Image (cartoon, rainbow, N blue to C red; front, side, top):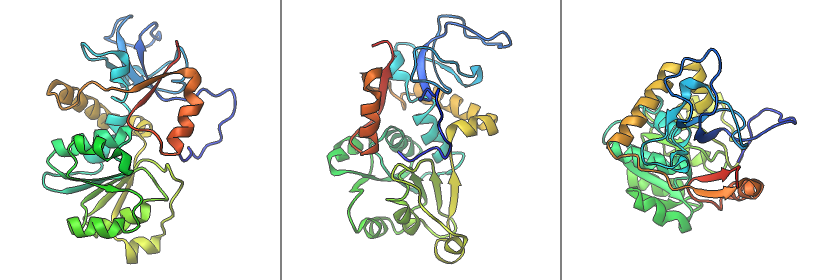
Length: 277
């Protein structure tokens, strides 16, 4: 799963995104959402029974959806959308490579890239190909095949945008298949560990545009961009592009086990923890 780059010291409650009922509002918060509204949002400490989150970053759970179905809205879908649009600047007809396409962000990215008119090349382990194909990917390749870069280049002639969340295991491939100068790579994870890149690489070997993305940092540093993301997500839901999620819901006690499975690449789609079970 990589790491945050920060030392985690107890007491520490993990988790970032949660959905549930508003049971209290801070004294200085001007929120149009009354107590009892079910919302989805982000903030520290989501692996707990109660948490706080910024009022500006929450969205009501869509009508008819369960709380669990809304998970991913402000994390997976917002990340995928930010990577594709304000950062990735994808356009109709371009080629988008989605690494780790069977994960939560990856699945959202495949759906969105197809919606915006891109040709989607996806990577995943063979056991997960059927899931990614069902989302509309034009081509799904084995993420561990030794000639992955050559296969992508033969198929596309070069990629316009890469969504990179794996890190060390795939970053070299992502660099080599991206079109020089006009091609973009948006990096939002390092599940297999950190990759290295030098200024010499960028000047003489891989002349590509590389952008980093952390959705929580984006919300703080560029609030207008984040508000656009939330508005666009609501529009995608209204138009049926974003269907209710179907996460695998587990008791909170299974969190450590699920994190180990996630690190080993043994999971598929969105995982959710229920602290009340």
